[in-house]
Length: 322
Image (cartoon, rainbow, N blue to C red; front, side, top):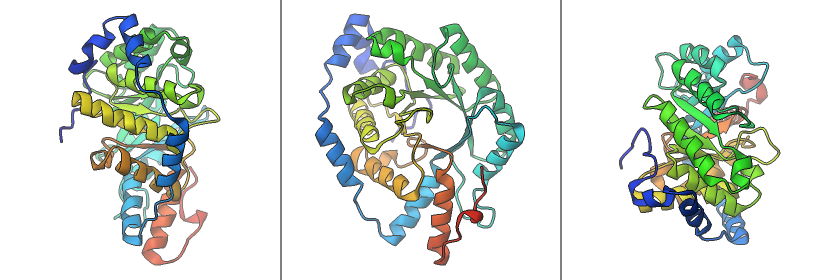
C-alpha cells in the first residue's frame, strides 16, 4: 500500500472533470444518486455487529490512537492546551501501555503551544483554519489563517468549505479555494476538508462534496466542525467511506476520513471502526487514514480500557476533566 503525504490536486485519471465549471458540475451531478433508506439501513445493520472481548481490547486501543484530541473554545488558554497535549502523549499516566492519540487539534494561535507540549512524541498538531467554523471570510483572509498555522508548526490543517457557495451550485469556487489552501499547506501539512454535513441537507450533496474535496487535493475528508446540531452520523460517515474507496479504485489515490462531533462513547467508536472495516477495508484501519474528531470520547475509551484490564469500572474520577 502506498502512503502519500499529500494527495495530488485533481488526480490524473479525473483531470478533465475539473477543466471548467460546466465539466465539474456535469461530473458531480452525474454521480449515482444515494439510496437514503438503503444507506441508513446498512449503517444500522453494521452498528449491531458484536465484538468479542479480545477484539474489543484491540479496537479500543486502535480508537485511542485515532483520536484528534480537540479543544476549540474561545476560553482556551495556553495552560489548557499544554494539559491537553500532555494527555495526548500519555492518555493514562497510570498505564504506559496505553497508546498516544493521533493529534491535538487547536486554533492557529495555540499551535506553537501545542507543538511544545507534544515535542518528542509522535502526536501531531492539527489546526483549524479558513475562518472556522463558518468559513465566512475572503480568500486572502482564509489563506492568511492557514499560513499562520503552518508557520507555527501545524502538521495538519482542518479547513471548512464555503457551504453557501456549494449549496448555490458554485462548485468551482469551492474547488478553487480547496486547491489554494492545499497549495498554501505545501508539503508541511496534510489537509483535512470539512464539509459540515449537517448543513448540506442531502446525502447526494455529501457524496458530491466528498468527490469535490478529493478532486481538489484533500488528504482527509471530514464530516463536521462539531459546532452545529447534526455532526458525524454512521450514515454520513458510511457514505464518505464509500466515496474514498471508490476514489482510490478509480485514481489509485487514498484519502482519509474523519468523523467529528457527537462521538462520545467507546461503543460509538467501535461501531465506526466496523463501518471502516466493512466499507473501505483494512487499509483505512490506521490513524494515517482514519481519525475521530473528539474531546470527550478519549475519557470513555480509557475507562472501558481499564475495565477490560482490571474487571472493574473506575468511574469518571479515573480520567481528567478537559
